[in-house]
Length: 221
Image (cartoon, rainbow, N blue to C red; front, top):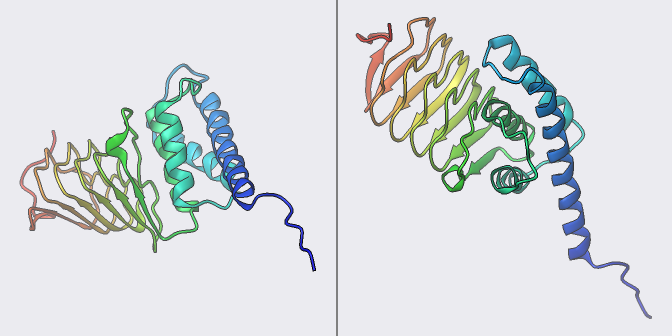
């Protein structure tokens, strides 16, 4: 009996992956076009929440895996055809990809990118672990919602701002106002912390294994 194989399975898989990447890129471009219309982007709370919500809406029908997120980051970093690489919305979009991803543990090699992503780990949900190989920009772990963010390098300012629960581990250094408006959870920094945010309602911040907040003695004025 003769069996006829219709189509090359590898070609079909490659085509499906390209279609997924195209859908991700299209969603980001539509988001960026809206965000850039005022010729600027401000990291104001309501603006951030709106942009993240729009990102999630654009990804709702996609089945995503870590390799899809890596492909998007690589395309955003290296392609001249991406005219709207805005660090804030790009990071929020990556965070939406991570929270929508089918896998519970995602690793991103940010150290190979020339561009900086802010807001990595935004709203990271319980049951998700995001590992950043390299440095993260400002607002890493913003509004963390029970997930675990591990940054193998350093983070910028406002790490863990508005964090509601979960864990942030920074293997090197953290910038100013770490934990600003923090509600709960834990932030661990193995290196130096430039300053701890004043407006905090709970949670713990540890530096080099020692609890410094709520007993922190230095704040950013």
